[in-house]
Length: 443
Image (cartoon, rainbow, N blue to C red; front, side, top):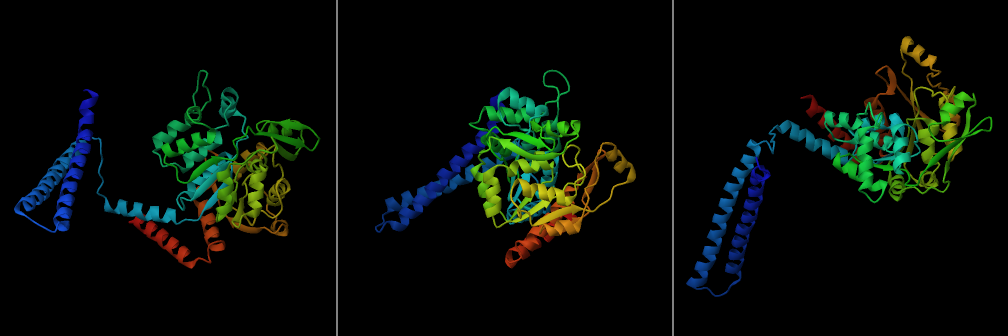
């Protein structure tokens, strides 16, 4: 079949639409001229009647033939029509709900951030994900070295977490090649690298990929500068490279004293700063403390905006400690490290997991020197940080992760209660739509 053959029904639809527009113009012109003219004669009356009748006839032909062309498209499989009114009602309520949701900015990187985003996108479409670009390991590190681009890995995961894609599409973008020169490289990373190649900068590439995948909200790198993360260990040693820091800390049996970035004056994206200043809430983490969360705060524009914003600020504490980064850390140690690398008081609430795991899985983690993060409520309260507790544990493929639905639910509930309670009309309408949406989905 020639390409023209299967394009023909679509071409005909456009043709009939144009003809219909012409018919409407005939009708409008005839009516206006008839009304505006003061003197009439049989000639003019006949002319106006001819225009109006011709317009009606042309409009009738265009509608009937246009419908036939649309039916032809449907029969050939180019269009699909769903008449499920319940699904349509759910969609309408869902869109209204998401648009009215709070403005939320999430800051971090790694698996934890993308996990949380998967839950948040069902409560609000006003999400801005500000993602670290310090990664230099794995496939992202290879692309960064070979192409001179910013690491795409964490950005890719956040885009997919917020995307409205079919499971097959997500599986494709997460696929890693198993052999050859592309071994261990993600197809999604290559997709973003290709976008970077046809864009003026990495920010534009991220925006284009987000548009293609119909992302809810926005995803952006914290900076477009070539960021290098370094760490100073307690023994005085300086480690360069995000992927090397935990490994060298374990190797030399020395804890991290502080981390810093080069260039020190890295500039944050203007859109990222604006999003923080306009937000209802800002969420830090979850994710690796020194290599995913804190690097974003080392960009001075971000740290300054965090101090100026009137948004409620929440930190989602990790469930487990991370070897080489947070060995023996309690919740208060995580918070103190954030304060030390930015400024005290930039956290209002900390989300803490109090759920338990079975002994077998806990034993497996202990073998890898990873333990449940300790909780000392008195020490946390002395830091002027309020505590919100819950069971957020989810086990996937033998790994402990945050339950995205439970975590998103408690975050939105806290934001609406603590930040937006003064706007009664907004909060009542939001929860009314939320309840209607739940009822419709349960029918």
